[in-house]
Image 1: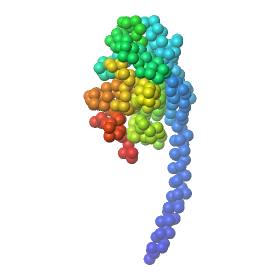
Image 2: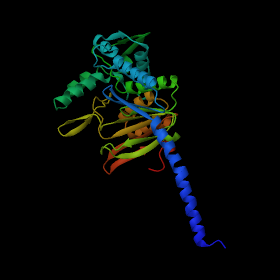
Image 3: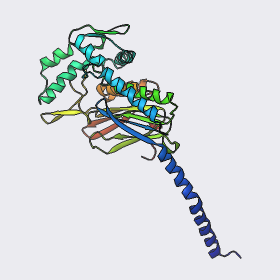
Image 4: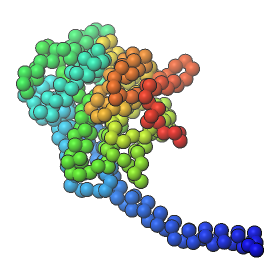
Length: 340
C-alpha cells in the first residue's frame, strides 16, 4: 500500500522539482521585463519630467523630451524670447500652431468652467507672487485693478495673431501647458512605435498602454497634508491623470498657507476647500485644465461639472471641520485599485 509517509515524500519531491525548474524561469521573465523598462528624467518647465518606456528606445525618448522643451520655449511667460512673453509685453503676437492650439483649447475650457479656468489671470498671479515675496496680502485696490484685466473674452484671435483688448493684460499657460506637452510627447512615442510608456510632468501624466508585467499602470495620489503618504491608488491604461493642489506650490503670509491657484472671479487664492483635485481623462491637456478649473469651482460645483462630462472622472479632497473629506465621481471606482 501507498503509505502516508511515501505520499508526503512524493509531494515534497514534486515541489522541489518545481522550484528547481520553474522558479528560475519566472525570475528570468521578471528580470527581462524590468530590464526592458527604462526611466529617464529631466528638469523642464520648472518641474521633474520623467519618461518611462517599455522597451527602451533612445531616439523616441530623446524626441519626446525635445517636444516638451519646445513647448516650454514657446509658452514660458518668464522666458524672454518665448511667444507668450512677447505677447504679454506687446499686447499682440503672431504665434506658432502649438501656442495657438493651446490658447484655443484654454478658451474652450474657460467657457466650460464658467471662467473658473482663465489663462488671463496672469495679472492676479503676478500680484500674489509679489505679495508673497513681501509677506503681505494684496490690498483690495490692488486686487480690483488686477481683476479689471482678467477675462478670457478679451482675447482676440485673428488667424495666428493673438491680441488683447485691454492694455496690461497677460496670459499664464501654467494650468494647461504641461498637460499639452505630455500629450505631444505621447504622440512622438506612438509615432516611434512605442505602445507602453508613462510620461509624467510634475504630476500631469499619461499612461500609454500597459505597464510592467502587462498590467495597468498604478498611480498613487498623495495625501495633500502628509508628504509621502498615499491616500488612493488608481490603475489606468491609455488614460491621462492630473492633480491640482495647494501642497506643492504655495506661500505663507502671516502663518497662513496660500495656494498658487487664484480664483479669476474674486482675485483671491483658493484655500483649503478643496486641498487637491485629481482628474482622469482621455488626454492630459483636458485633465490638466479641468483639475485647475475644478479646484477653483470647489467640491460641490466642481463635482457637478465632472459628473456632467463624458469620459471624465475625478476625486476631490477637501478640508472640513471633521478632517479630510474625499469625494469621487460616479465612475471613479472602475479605476481605483481593489488592493488599496
